[in-house]
Image (cartoon, rainbow, N blue to C red; front, side, top):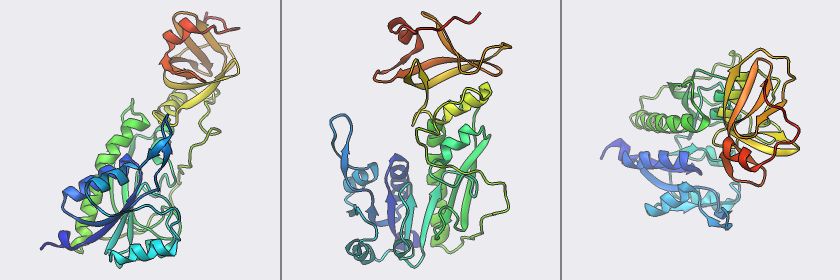
Length: 315
């Protein structure tokens, strides 16, 4: 029997990003003895009880699945210990107490969707696009007390295309991440992994969690930065602004560089053709939006059914 089959793994994760990693790890015939994921909860339009993608997949593969509400619960920790895992793999889960991440003899390894130490935090994919980065990547590292600071095991880079959104970069890093995690596990299994500390001397950019206050468009920025902001929040949580006191989410937009003397943030409209906003170096043309309480729609459809009061067309 190979070391790959001998390595006993507990996998922890919640969303589709993590589920894909679990699927790939199993395809490599690693021995996942149990999975830990969030508790089922109501969701969707009908508020039906839903499992995480990781939970659903683990159950379909008949893998024991633990869904603790409290990771510090002693019964949960005893159950976790009973699986006698050699290592734990954590991807898109939540902060672990030391009693959990320090439990297995080979420790706990995490995959982060950035080139650490850059973009530590909850939303590295979004902020890489927002900040106009030309490359991103993934990092596998060992967990320790401070979040996203443990020793680096492997890193892999990928280019960010000029039309990249957070959604498309997510999909690229999901595939790259799975390949990197599998390589990491193989190297740990045959004891060929080399760990190195993160370089704290760099000018570090963070990736804080996204809320309403930091996803609102600032029309005082230049056009390309605004486009990066919109792309970096697509398809979730979506950049937003206000039009006549109503919240509008902006899904897609274009930038036209023009000299003008208009104040930033002023909306211009032709009732049938376009909806644009002035910025310091031109105009942002909105292509796909969602008005508060309405469905997502093309701007042409929006203008056919909504009167944009008090706005003048671009001269």
